[in-house]
Length: 194
Image 1 (cartoon, rainbow, N blue to C red):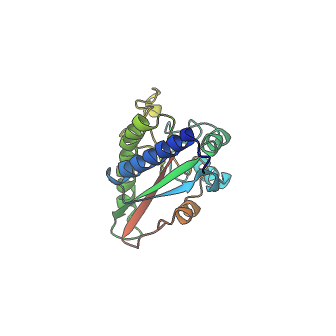
Image 2: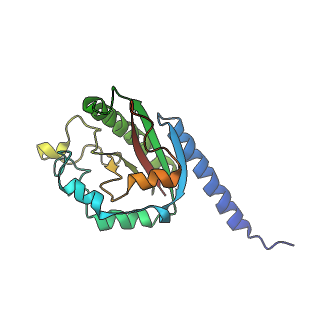
């Protein structure tokens, strides 16, 4: 005789159904690979946010979804740590070689726009989910911050894993996804926390 709780069984089935739907959304919307990890196992390090603040990419204080506008690191980390699971995904794109900075930047913009579209679909399924991408949000050709306007697409604007303090190399390893797919590719990572 088993003491199974029918409500717990329904919750488990619902959780598995949502996980299956999220996985399908990712793989059917332009991303190459996806894998689940426990949110509590994701490594956070302020070092990555510090790199944002050094403005190495030129977007610090020039993009609504980059520091400092995106909010304090502690708040972002607390939100992500409150979630139970994360679906890690990537987009692998061809480039002319390791020095093809223009190709990498262009694919980064494509990735950001794909993540923005994915976010809209994810929020229809799981409104409380947090979807993260890579690098600065590129949904708009020029961020509204630069013209002193509010974000034009706050529901789908893309915050990066790095601005959230996530160690992307360790996240890739934790998920079993390749961090690099070879010298003639660039791989961008994102994640859905819920």
